[in-house]
Length: 409
Ligand SMILES: [Zn+2]
Image (cartoon, rainbow, N blue to C red; front, side):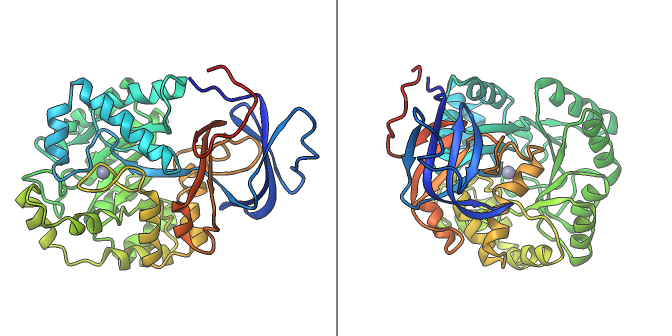
């Protein structure tokens, strides 16, 4: 198992810290942390005995954060059938581990997993211990849904406020970092309707109260304006998807500081493979009913001051794990500027995960979670795809092998 070496430095780099700014210089790393950043960090200043790696002007960014993924899901034509078949088998763990590794190699050093079997907590903990190489995982585990409701096959199915309170409590006891509740139906679950609420405003309030009493954040899958509004008014920390959002509700989210994770990439991914005969027919029916331009509503919400975050919904139909740069391109198409998009995948996402200063930044004290690319993503976000190296918690996990002082392995 790779362990961080004691002390080393990247020098001669372009440093892009989206929450702070841009400067040239280097990064000094000790163990799993960044200890110094900026123009004063060079081969001379770090002192003899510290290995330095010259990046030749390449760009260093904080590792990317995906605020909405499903690592246990297969990202093929039939992810629901696959997860139902694999739940409770070793194949599930294997798949999640491979998907996590894939995301990490694409520069995603933190993944928030928003729905799957509670086995995800085991992978989260194995990665945290260093037994498995992968991104930091923040996970909801099983979702809270209605009987037969959206994602019931990976959910706790409840109807009354008492059952909701109990289910939220059980997820927290099982180790959930965040509670996910399906406020509306969804595309992936047969017999559910994305245009219908599954829970009342009072139900959502109960869920938020129980989660927040335990200091655990809560987020809602919400695809109608009414559901988004109800979740925001109930004190939810963020909204997933947010289809149907109207201007007055965007203003409410902006005022309350409720973040929106629009997951814009799901529909383009589906449409790219729409002629795949394996796709369940109901998915076509539901997609055919869509009239809303979600790129326009997301851009409008951003203009109203809503915090927009990057989430891929990876694992769902044809949405690849680690496709954070794709989602960032979609946000650009929606009208966000490059700095806001980079923040949406770093500093702003870290805030949503209650990890300010620890991830999503190059500031001293943060984990040495780094994405190093050849070009300049501030000039062109497509530069994020030309990866030179990925470092997680001080360990080089992708990219050219650098000669570092030997570490226990
Ligand atoms: Zn999802």
